[in-house]
Every structure is written in structure tokens, then in C-alpha cells.
Length: 233
Image (cartoon, rainbow, N blue to C red):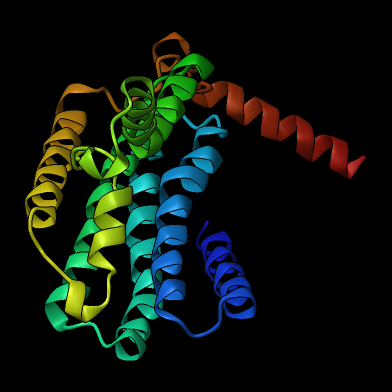
């Protein structure tokens, strides 16, 4: 998963350099691509796997940590080129980490159950967090004739927060995106705690598995004697 994540970031960065070049728009689209990878491609890859063992949710959390560490190698060099302040860079980092942690929660929840239906529901939830709110607002604005500039801020989807936080330093405004990011982070942390306590770690089929009894010592001795006699003959 980490290798695929690295290839995704390298591929997007190469494409942006070829098409846009070293421009502020490229930095914004790079962070956008990272969010799409974390909230679209990552759940699609993990939820397509049927893993119901005790380590299913642990794998998801390790994925999140590793991919976030790799993302630092992209974010901090961009800070130097884009001339973001330390506060702005930390806020971009916090937004990506918070919404991806929420996505990881949905992935771990879907993988905790033994049916493909629940994994499908988890995948739909990940997509809904990313695009449902902006699509609903845009459709409502088109229906009633409201200008896009009059639409309310996105609170569930990270798209607007990431776009505003990656603005040029002169246009950077931390509010209200700090509050939204903290809210998402708190919801994700609470969700992970509930998942760890309320959802069983064992596979739903584990209770139906009956392990065969261990062989008796006498039977083991006779079996070894028979194998020895055959080898001598």
C-alpha cells in the first residue's frame, strides 16, 4: 500500500509539473490529489480485500501512519517553494491528517464485518464524505438559482478547506477552517475509540471453527514407529 501511495504522489507531481509547471496552482492540486488518494483510492484498495482477522483494523491504522509520513516528504518541500508560513503548513497537514483519519475509521469499520455488503457501505460512506456535500449544495443552488459565491462553507467534505488552506500566503485565512478541522479530528478519534471497544475483533466465523483435538501420546508413538519401520524396509 505504501509503494502504491508513493507511485501515486510521484505520478501526480510529474503530471502537474508537465502541465502546469512550478506555479501556486500546482501546489494546490498536489494537495488535492493527496486527499483524493487518501479518501478515494485507499479505501477502494483496502475494502476490496476480504480480511476479517484480528489485525484488520490495525493494518488500516498502520496504513494511515505510513502514508501520512510519506506525505511529509511532499508537503514540506512545497512549503519552501510556495512560501507558506509554518502555521499554514501545519494547518494543511492537520486537515489532510484529520479527514484521512476519518476515512481510515470508515475503512476499519467496513473491514470489521464479514460481508461484502458492509464493505460496500463503507466505501460509499468514504465517497459521500468527499463529494456528497458539495454536490448537494451545487444541485440545490442550480435548482433555486443561487450564486455559487452565496453557498455555505463545506463542513463535512475537505475539498473547500484544502483549497482555502493552500492559498497564497497573502490570501491565507485560518478561520473557520481550523474549527472544521478540529471537529473532524475529534469525531475521528472518538470513532476509533468506539470501534476499538464496541466492535468485536474476532471474525464472525471464528466461533464456528472447531479445532481438532490434539493427538494422544500413544497414537503419536505408534505413528512414529510405523514411519520408522517403513523407512527401514
